[in-house]
Length: 215
Image (cartoon, rainbow, N blue to C red; front, side):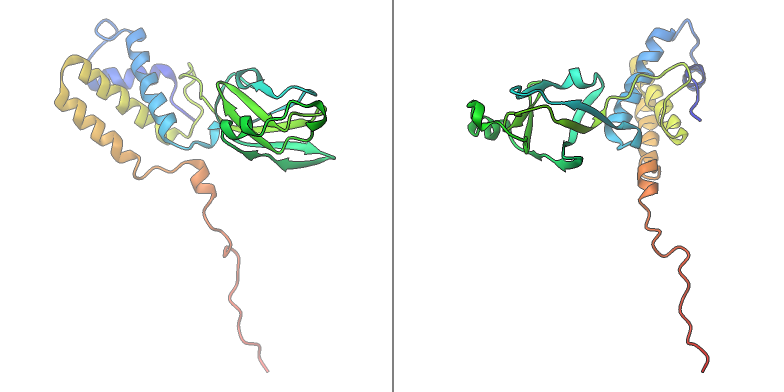
């Protein structure tokens, strides 16, 4: 379970020797969130993975990505459902989609290519009817809540050290800022995400070596 927001604040203030007057919550929370944003950007947290379902509209090629979900950071894959089977849609550059576009109503069909451009997702060919489609994506994780962050608690120290380094830098103490930043960076060399731990090869677990049978 993650540390709560107040504990994050207390730890940074204790390390920097500052109190609520020297380091108000508004400023400290900004540094904590900047440290958290940096961590979330650099680490492939399983918590960033998400899916959203929608439907195409006959004759409509593009769909607003933010309209599908407000927390989409980047698209990973797209699947379309045809006759109860989910089929992957190939990703293409927007220029390729544009070059192959045919606005003729008779050229519409089941989309088999897509591209993301200008905040929208474009399908090709233009759908001839409503098709369910599913997007897997990486989402933007929310700012630090009162209860903390929704990632493994081993990363709490990374956030604390990241904020502490920034507080020292703001005070003009660049030597301490660099020392704390180096300590924080060392954590990334040893910490593992849940996703990484779940990919450990367990194929040999429970396998017993074969022994020669007695005659």
